[in-house]
Length: 281
Image (cartoon, rainbow, N blue to C red; front, side):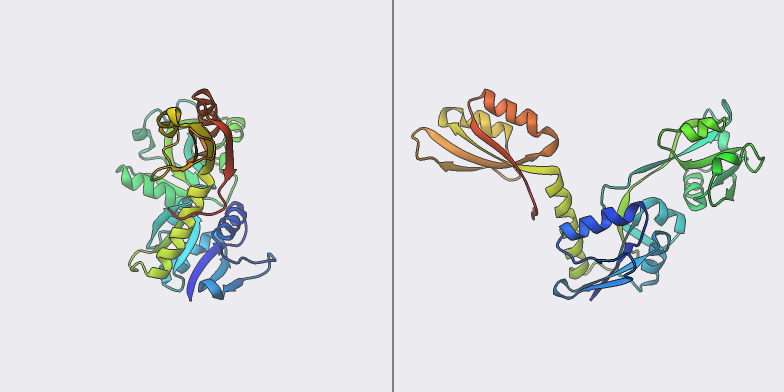
């Protein structure tokens, strides 16, 4: 059976659980369950600390894992990103006393405090910079005031906590993180693992799209289908009413209302948008 690591708690856990359920996989009923076997789908799920998942995948004990890009880079594990799951987004930035860091080169020769030393070292190595990285387990915003470091690197949402500590958030982005599927770097992709990734990718497609159905006069059909081209091509069916056809097509959820308005303006009627529970594209 395919063995997959899933976050057991934290920001990644609930969203990963929901996505796997939408993909048709059985998930745990209770937070204390450590493993769930989904025999019909040939998969076993192991619920692990998010920070440990990359290490388990690297060891070869597990085939795939769901974790954060930041946690993968921070671990230094020999695992690679297979699919961006597009949830749990976060941005890492530097912060320092106002005016201390104006450009990337100002990081050279400094001490940087962070809870993600692997992420910071990865950034420094990418840009040929040399700094001392100080690992802290939390509350990095106090590091500058207490003299532990001159700069901190942390997840930044509004930056309010850092500003309260007298720090200025720098423009430089250390990393954009999100939830991802990973596999061992040296492992070959099997049919079973590719099947799981395909299902998860299909969940992303289903979430982003709706099915739009409407009736439209034949004379306006070309204008209408230009608005709803679908994935391959819209489905067009003859109606009992002469001179009218029914159309069905997938459309982006983000532009759904604007498309419905435009369809109405070209003569379409009975315009309906419905959720897509599952799909394969």
